[in-house]
Length: 78
Image (cartoon, rainbow, N blue to C red; front, side, top):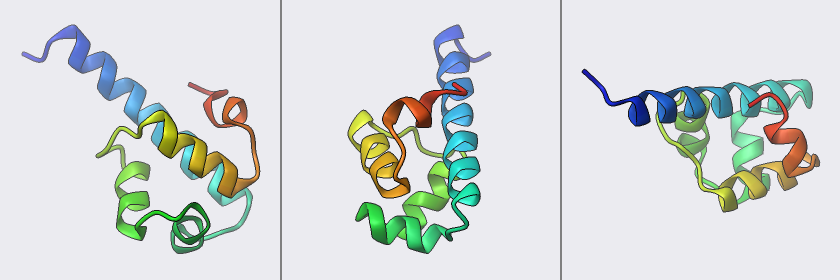
């Protein structure tokens, strides 16, 4: 059985994933475009949006900047 910390981390990661995807789609840009604007790998963006990776604060900042939103906007629904 996973520890409570693991469950919490997974829930957080999934919320981050949904927020990134929601904002990206609202801006009508592809994962490829977001990756290019944020200077990240396209497959990394895909992994983030599927909740497979938990991004660092620096990566979240890069994504927010690429989406032209604040970091607060990116974390609003979390």
